[in-house]
Image (cartoon, rainbow, N blue to C red; front, side):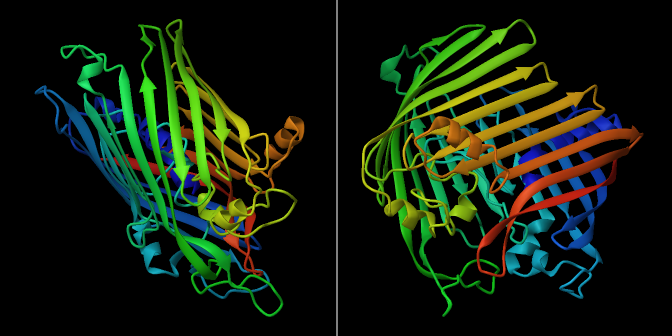
Length: 469
């Protein structure tokens, strides 16, 4: 997972900077990059040699649907063979050199596709195949920061795309092209009747979103001793499952947009056919302070009806769809859909706040906290990246959801507890020429012997090198 969390924003820039090469935005010709990383670190009781050779191809290409002749975008094809070779085999001994859980199902062999990508998140057209995340849908009230790979033992080849035209837009996300179960679509429009037909301001955006888990677990299989059973694919064995669907309608208004300040209120109404309806209304603020500092924030009020859960598809959804914390008491309550349906139906009030700071192209910090002030609990997100003189690159992502509580201090204390948290940190430090030191520390999930997902540490440290031609 941590390869997908930070690599898009840190790894490629770090590699090019380490090599002293021009960045993608400055490149005029096709570029091949051959690189590799090696590190040593434990996974549970064993120690592994982490070996990852890569080959990437980057090429400037015309931007589709652009009215100017000089519009340009980029295509990237990046491939890798991530191998974890067992060098210390402690009890219980496995006897395998290559970690078998990394290649135990057909979808795992698509790990070699690190990324196929056209454009970038900032371009009018963007399409990406590979590990996806953090993925949002619209104003991020249904899907907020979703990752399709968060376990040590499973890989998913997902796709996400975005099209942003002057008068309309679209989004698509599929979590796994080999066996899809999570599908999301969005369409938006900026109607002419709202503004002058010759204007480029495009002040009002109206959107419709649909997200579906076509096979959401509702009951896990249990043995004679009432323990959860593990399936042959290293996931909990599902006894019952059914589709669940969320639809939403939203409005976003560019109330003010100047050279250094923008104010954008928005409203979303979402209906989860299995759980109820929720209203989200908030405001986005962007401000430039001087030439180097940029601040942005999001403040949102939530009115939650019945058993509705905001941000239902969150960064941990690939775990919680099987195994979710109980809302009313400590412990696990089974699949998320079943746990939510067991809540008492009520009207609740909640909120979401996010603050992001970006200084030049060197430092970016972001913190977000949500609390439904009721049985749906709270969640904390932290993100940071740092680059110093093209020699040091650091990145961090943290997410923790906690069960419901009526006290803010208790919810915040639970949110900073590493137990059950999704954590990814990565660092690269240039050494000499094409060589750099690298390391990763993460908390992911794996299926335990009792059929439950368990939160484990992953760590490796080593070196890397890359060459362009």
